[in-house]
Each structure stands twice: as C-alpha cells, then as structure tokens.
Length: 468
Ligand SMILES: Nc1ncnc2c1ncn2[C@@H]1O[C@H](COP(=O)(O)OP(=O)(O)OP(=O)(O)O)[C@@H](O)[C@H]1O
Image 1 (tube, rainbow, N blue to C red):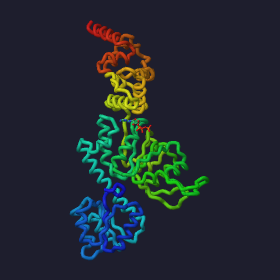
Image 2: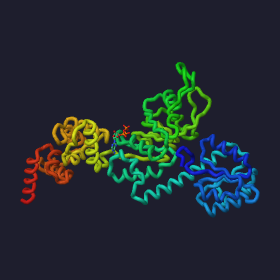
Image 3: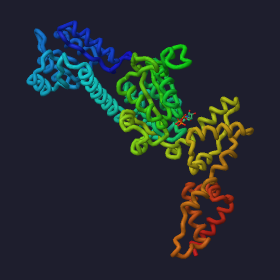
Image 4: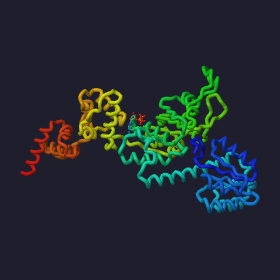
C-alpha cells in the first residue's frame, strides 16, 4: 500500500453515470480521501472485489441490469465486513429503511449537502478503521511475537508490559489516527514516537516540535507557516512544520503545556484535517500522522478545565503509557549494560565490568529522571573509570541517600503507646533490610549504613537472642 494513501483500505464507487463518479472522486480527494476505485459497470464489481482490498463501497441505488439493492444483498452475503453506503437520486423513506434493514451503513440522497455526505463517509471509514484495528489487535494479543522487532531496536527492555505496548503499537501501525504517549519525564516517550513513525512505513520524515512555552502566535507560525506579508517582517512565505511532515509523522512533545487557544487550533487540525497558514485564506490539508506526548496527567487536566475535553478524547484514540523505570526494575541491569557500552564506544574505552550488585543496589533509588537520569549517571561513571571496572562512586550518594527523608515523613509512634526499645527497632530494621536485599548481606549493610561485618555480627546476636 502507498503509505500516503488514505484510508488504509480502498473505497469503491459504483455508479452507471461516469460524470457522478468523476465529481464524487474529486470531492473525496479534496478532503484527503485518495484511495479510491471507480466502477461504472456494475457487473465488474465481483471481479474488483476479488482483486482489491475494499473496506467501503458507495453504491448507486438505481442502475440498469443490476440494481443497487441486488448488489447490496450480494455484498452483505459475500463481504459482510465491508461497509456499504447507498446513494440515490431520490429521497424515498421506504427505500432508505429497506436498505438500512438489509445492512447498508447509510442511505444518502445525491443532492444532499456535501458536508452531510462527507460526514457519513468519514463515519463509515472510522468504523471500518476501528474494526480493522480490533482485528489486528486481537491477532497481536493472541501471538506473543513481535512482527517488527527491528523497529524497537533502540529500545532496551525485558519488561512484559513494555513488550505488550510494542505489540499494541504494531497493531495500530497503519492507522491514520493520532497516538497519545504518556509517562514521566525521561521514560523514553520520544523513542516510542520514533518507533511509531518507523512502524507506520510512511516515507515522509518524522518532524518533532516541543510545544511547551510556545505562545499561540509562535505555535501557529511554527506549525502552519505564513503567507508573504502576513505580518511585519514576513517578507517571504514560509511553510510550517505540518507541511514539512507531509507523508510522515508530526510529533508534538509536551502537549500538556499547550495554551488554550493553541488547543483549539490543534483540535481543528485533527478534526477537519485542514489548517490555514497565517495571513492566508486558502486552507491546506494535513498529510501527516500526528503523535503527541506529555509527562502531565491529561485526564486530570481536562477534569480541572485546563485541557480541552474534546481535544483529550480526540488525542486518546490510541494511547500508550510508558511506566517509570522504578516500576520495571528488570530493565535496570540491561540498561546499565547498554549505556556502559554506548558510553565506552563514544569515549573510545574498552568495555568495563559492572559490579554484580550495582543493579540490586539501585533498585531502592526512585529514579525521578528515569532512563535519562540513569544514562547520565552511567556516562558520568564511565568517564570517571580508570580501571577495568565501572567506577560506582557516582551511584553511591543515591543509594540510601534520600531514605532518611522518607523515613522521617512516614514513621510515627502512637503517643498513647510505650516506645519500642532500640533493640526491638534495630531488629525490625535489620529484618526489613535483609528482605529487601534478598538476603544479600553486603547490600543490606549498605542500606542500613553499617559495614557488612557489623551487620553479620548483629544477625548473629539476633539469632542467639531468639534461641534463648
Ligand atoms: N528503554 C530504553 N532503551 C534505551 N534508551 C532509552 C530507553 N528509554 C529511554 N532511553 C534514552 O533515554 C533518554 C530519554 O528518553 P526520551 O527523550 O525518549 O524520554 P522522554 O520520555 O521523551 O522525556 P521528556 O518527557 O523529558 O521529553 C534518551 O537518550 C533515550 O534514548
């Protein structure tokens, strides 16, 4: 399939009047629907259906030899998953009711308002797209394999949740609908946007725009461009990034920070598929898929009224949430190794050995900056390493460093109860540390801020006390 063809399946127009076929095709193309086949000989329909992947049929009701109603019955028998919209020269309630009863998606009078006709066609396309995506998703969920694993090559993970996300992204690869990526800062949202673009097979570019802090004028100028003379200093027309992304993907990062007036413009762009360069009264059509990302909670923002509800629902047609690093700790050793190799390559050093308990120690650090923070730490550690082993001093301040705070905030002794003794408390603490460290004494000792021999001695005393 030509990736810039839309919709992702063909629309078949069947009418014995070539002039209607011509004008209808032109109308559809003007609205960005360019994946069309026309047929003025109804007896050829059967062959066309067997040769092409058709998802929607626009069928004239009154044709000589084979009537639209006969063809509709045939479609519902042979191709029940294909949507059929009946076109008729006459506004006949009986015929309309009959066709819809027979399974037509809609019945439209040829002289109806163009907007009304397009609305019905767009609805049919959307329904068909969702059904195709459901099928793809079901197939993906039933298989455990990634079909296009190479597109995720930049993404290091062993997390089952992330692999399911990849499978979901594969299943929506061909969709033209927007994708919303959420997740804390540094979890890899931009990397995911790149994978979505690669998976789509679109041959245009991936164009990234960080929309945080853009005021409405700059947002419009950046995205939509301007006509010559649009404002003082606009001595040349300039194309916007929506146009630069034609045939590819437009990635809008930090979408939660978009101003209210820019939200209206983005909604219009997504709903109507068109925009006006500043100072121009000629609309242009968007030919890029839109992917957006945010570290903010858009659901909360729309409830508080700072993010438009209609835009939120439009954006979340397809949605993925990338969990923070602290919730996929299995990725820690893989990422440590990956970034160590990356840093060594860049700094032209031999690969370094990573202390086996480093990942285990880091499990207790919450990584507020997620993968980006881990990457920076590893690069720092590599640059400070002079031996064969990774210098772990940069990590040491993190492990245990912020636990005192949490401890002070969370531990309260009930005032109406006697205080525990120091021995009781220290026993509880030692047991907790040993559990968290999977019985690894050196790691537990580090968490408690004592040496490993000191911990060993305490454990021995505790054992003896319990045996008394
Ligand atoms: N799973 C991963 N495997 C390898 N590298 C990763 C992974 N996740 C993130 N990275 C790297 O971490 C850094 C941060 O990732 P990215 O910029 O995609 O995060 P982000 O969620 O878009 O952050 P922000 O919200 O701040 O824009 C990048 O260098 C990226 O290549």
